[in-house]
Image (cartoon, rainbow, N blue to C red; front, top):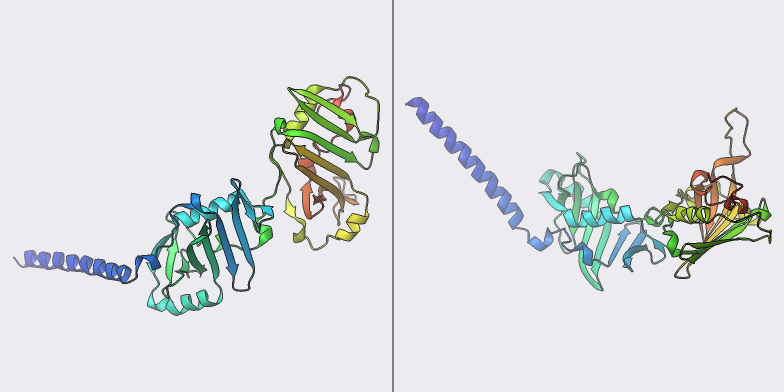
Length: 338
């Protein structure tokens, strides 16, 4: 009988404990208006602009234009970074209220080191949130909504870690590294100037209906019948071509010196819309690199400096561009296709 009474008491204690936890959780959440803890953006497909600014006033504006995203109205945005940002805004959820023990730390962090994020639909501001740093266990992120004085610990369900790094404001980090992404049918011409061997400079013209022509920029006579398959193969290589880094990440670049030097190659692609993109490549010093036999190199054999459309310096890789910096003679049957 005594054992039965103890079991009943134990069950009552468990029930009361569960009820108390539920009431605390319910009261904690419902004493704060939903609009002050509702961080998610339900329809990210309709978002047209995202403005982010840090406390040091460094900022970035991302805008949706013609089906793609632009950085500060000038550069194409990285697709991978945009996908992550939009998915984060859609999936973000409150993980827990900020405990009393963490409250001062969270408030101070949001007051001194936050990133303000404004989300727009057309001209309408639909959400403003302040992104702070990670919690002590690195499993959550302190955030607060505009108009609220109460911070929360937020997360993306299923993701382990914190979210602060997804809301970065550095322009270079947002820029897409894509240079060319064309089907050969969308290309009108590709011109390559070879400054080391000018007689190998050429232009490949896409005349439509699988008709192609290669022209010597040095006025050379054709050494035979040009190979149509080689020209089509060449134009097919302009799908998913990108550069490696922004040159601003390299303090040893001397832009004035490069501009005064002879370029290595210059490539210009013109598409069906009349848009031209020019890549002017320059050799890089090897800076201590050696060849396979240990002999010092003068020039870097893996990378080149490149100026895009006379305004943006980047680093490109030889193995990506060597098949694009072809020679005139490569389009004739006497030279095998590599």
